[in-house]
Structures are given as structure tokens and as C-alpha cells.
Image (cartoon, rainbow, N blue to C red; front, side, top):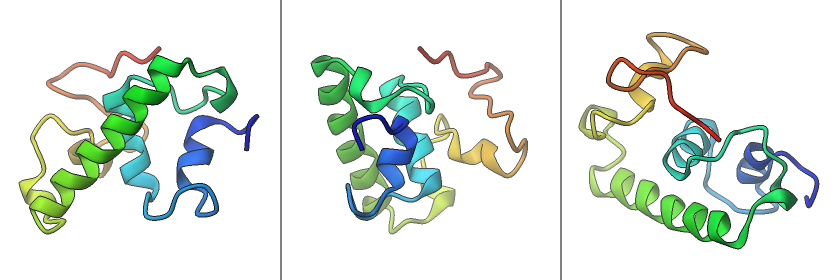
Length: 97
């Protein structure tokens, strides 16, 4: 897992259970971590941010009963179906890394 790309690590159920593809995308976006970044290259600060964002995104999804119509409007989740591979938030492409 050390040399796995970050997104691969977050969707690997042997590493952490319950994070699917869309949730991993959302968490990485909020943590400002590029999905192709190698997990072992993350700083301690990035790991702490990632942990915080995992908790925040999961807690919000649970709070609204996983009703996607109630997810915050700035979540990239809303762009997944509209523009596959081309997510935009508030008209801007996510600025990662």
C-alpha cells in the first residue's frame, strides 16, 4: 500500500472500509490531494488533512441520509454525472496539488 496512488489506497477495503469511488474523489478534492499522488509521498500535515476530510465528508453524507440532493452545492459529486472526467466547482476546475 505504501507505493499505491492515494485514491487506490482510499478505495482499497483492506486499508479502510466504506469509502467508495465518489466518496474518495470528494475527500481528495477537499483535502487538495491529487488522486495520482503516491501515498508514501504525503506529508504528515497532508495525512492529518486527509483524515479530517474523510471524517467531514462521511459525517455530512450520514447527516443527510446519503441523500445526494442535500449534499453541499460546492461538492464535486454534483458534477460527476454532468461532465464525466471534467468536474467543475462554481465554474472552475478543481486546483489540485
